[in-house]
Length: 111
Length: 113
Image 1: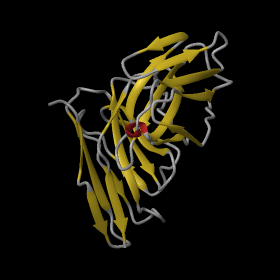
Image 2 (image 1 turned 60 degrees about the vertical axis):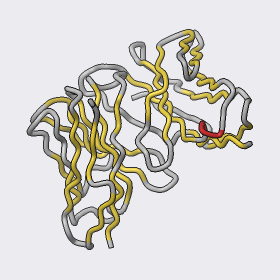
Image 3 (image 1 turned 90 degrees about the vertical axis):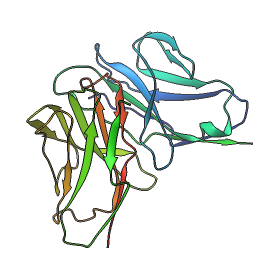
Image 4 (image 1 turned 135 degrees about the horizontal axis):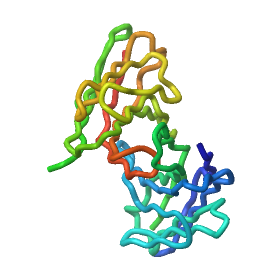
């Protein structure tokens, strides 16, 4: 399984764009990159997933460079309600592959 | 509504007792997972199951047991062999493993006194 490395914590202010980078140097050819968001005392929630280049949905954008050894989750114009822990996962849909979470990035949005 | 349900939300047990946490899903998902989360920490995988009647140990399976007799159910038993069972337990399901989106329950907070 590809190991991921993320910053432990980040601070931001309301209205700013937040970029959280995840390193996954040993990502495999058929691995996808997935991000989840978790609020206190709740289960994580899927945010976005991508394989290469750029993916955008109504919540976030995901930027993946050509070598795929890292990825960046971009949250536009954050609000206080975006304060949460964000997890980066790398894996592929193959029998025997687990869904493994790392420590995540604790984002604090300040007024 | 389709979803994944964990019960109860809060659970208290005396030390030395076994306790079973319930996880039910009506999403028709093949894969189900159990995680443990300690305060300020990430999720650690206890057990996972890719199909009925089959399951595999995760990173911290010692002191826990599971069964997968039905597709929609994946109960977790915390046994007396688990040295530090007080934690937040999360159940999840997905269509498959790896890159498939996982759906989580609301969690069970277990306190052992």
